[in-house]
Image (cartoon, rainbow, N blue to C red; front, side, top):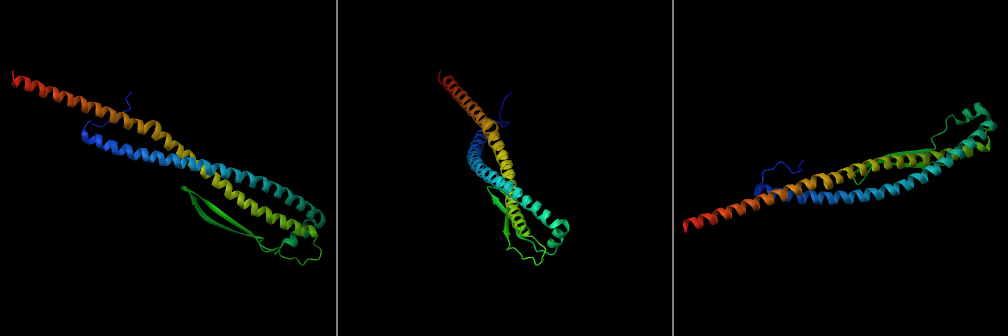
Length: 206
């Protein structure tokens, strides 16, 4: 089955197709460059994500370790009472961010200074668990940003790769084949015209 475009073989069509092919070739080169940059971004983001994931796992283990110690020393009731009225330990701001057409949230998490607790029956481990929980929350916020960014970068990379492949293996070859066909058709018509002119001259000059 022919891949040629359904376009009549005229000189005007040939000129338009050549201009469109140049535009498509430029677009392909730009998309190829974007794909390469996205691939580099994905690699860097993947390293960041893996590092934050390991850091978050360590902080979660440490925080729950100290939470279990505090729970044993203070008991559930005292632990709940000590936590009442405490101000938030972190501030989280989420702003939109865009890179190479990939939009994802930029998370900025800041830890506040530890608020003192005046309860006499609190254990020293209570402050340690609060610090570790705050550290854990900050890293988890950064991990969330890294994971969302990585997923969206991968999606954009796949879309760009599909566009590159469509241009390289389907659209551009069809344009080139159509241009080649029109060129051959016009050349053949020109040869026929010259042959007809030659015959007319020979007939008019016996």
